[in-house]
Image (cartoon, rainbow, N blue to C red):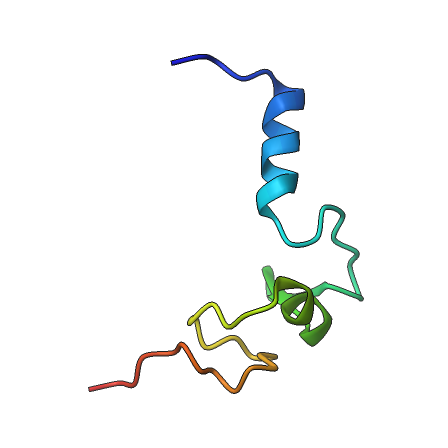
Length: 67
């Protein structure tokens, strides 16, 4: 397995992250030490992740119901 340098790691992370440069106040805000993603972030992501996010613009379509 080839070891990646920090620049390669950053490029790989940016390629998998929907927004390469998150902007506080636009894509997220901090609340009690937690990062809360905004609707703008979720729109850029393009789909519901299934985690019942507070600002999900996709009506939580991938969230499993509690049994």
